[in-house]
Amino acid sequence: MKVLVVGNGAREHAITWKLSQSPSDPTLFVAPGNAGTAEIAENVQIGAEDIESLVHYAKSNDIDLTVVGPEMPLAAGIVDRFDEAGLPVFGPTQRAARIESSKIFAKEIMESAGVPTAASKHFDNTADALNYIELAEPPYVVKADGLAAGKGVIMAPERADAITAIQDVMDHKIFGDSGSTILIEEWMTGPEVSVFAFVDGEYVSPMVAACDYKQIGDGDTGPNTGGMGSYSPPPFWNDALDDEVRRSIVEPVAKELSRVGSPYSGVLYAGLMLTDSGPKVIEFNCRLGDPETQVILPRLESDLLEIVHRAALSELEQTEIVWNDLACVGVVSASGGYPETHRTGFEITGLDAIDPSATVFHAGTQPTESTNPVTSGGRVLTVTGTGKTLAEATAAAYDNTARIAFDGRYHRTDIAANL
Ligand code: AMP
Ligand code: GLY
Image 1 (tube, rainbow, N blue to C red):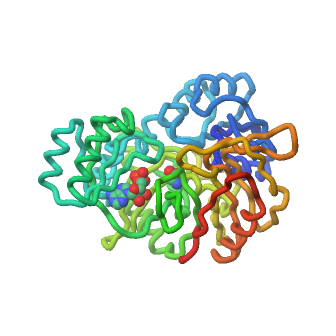
Image 2 (cartoon, rainbow, N blue to C red):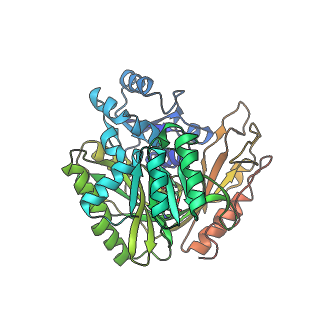
Image 3 (cartoon, helix red, strand yellow):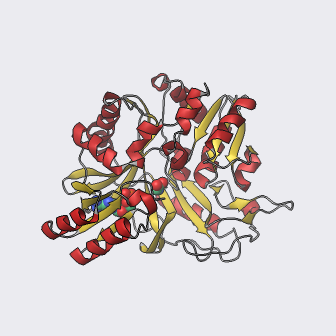
């Protein structure tokens, strides 16, 4: 089987790595990929958002199945285009992907399905939003409706903060057009957890949970990033919570999406907050998470190729999906200065010194003529440590991270610490 993975992050390297372990022994291609995927697949020089070129490539190279990693091409309708061309593809259609690409759509689905989430109001003009702030009590959360590369959320403890946020998003367009419509939400508190399931219509697979770290600095300080680390399973996750989240959140949403004519196929990712009054949805995503993928795919006992292939054929229920009890911790190494300006092009050494307790998933890396790749992005790689306990996995992740070097390398030192 010829399988094409779309994307170039550590998430897509992890997907490719897991597919490469399939007993079906697929031939793998990654568009555009990185130095890590180049070792286990053939990189194809087409960007993840260049949908027409991807369709053309898949057609002319007899690709049997395409697996889409990032949200942008999904929101832009890559699955619809592959469907039209008769090409099997794993991921939700553009309509179903609105569960991530429109926060208002997601709220409507949750409301009609009776799914617990932060109370919210939406506005398409500044005056109405400002009027609402005068009436509602602080604190508030101000969000752009559309995709904003994980950055479209402003926490506003006081009225003045919310007024500035509304003006920044709606008038000064700091998130571009994705902020033409905004939501003002209730500020929830509690531990956060990301929950993932493979979904095919109303069928929801066994789920898996992970936690990620969004801020650049230790102790959750500094600006948000694409993710600086993650671990799975969270110590507080148990069968009762899993059952509650499945019954009160994931299954009702899958059912409602089918009912409104946007049936879901792919990975459904629920970002949850465990509040005093139970689990509530922060947001849904229409794909696997990054860096969560790097700590959940090592926990997938089943054949990922079989899963994504069955899902693409709308027969997911016919395969068994099993998550193991391994503990995994992922530590991201970033370029110095990230998420602000940073330099790239530095040689990465030590990749050959990794022991079997860890796996390196590349993100911003580029192969070179010589043996070592060079850095080419903000987040450079994730080192995932595995063990019987989170403590063992954390030690493996950090021991192996320390063996890798490039100029200016930065990582958080508190991933999965203090649990
Ligand atoms: P999102 O991009 O919607 O996942 O939001 C990014 C982060 O903002 C989340 O991981 C939460 O930490 C925080 N956040 C978003 N919405 C809320 C909310 N209603 N209450 C509290 N925190 C929130
Ligand atoms: N881990 C956050 C995301 O993938 O959106």
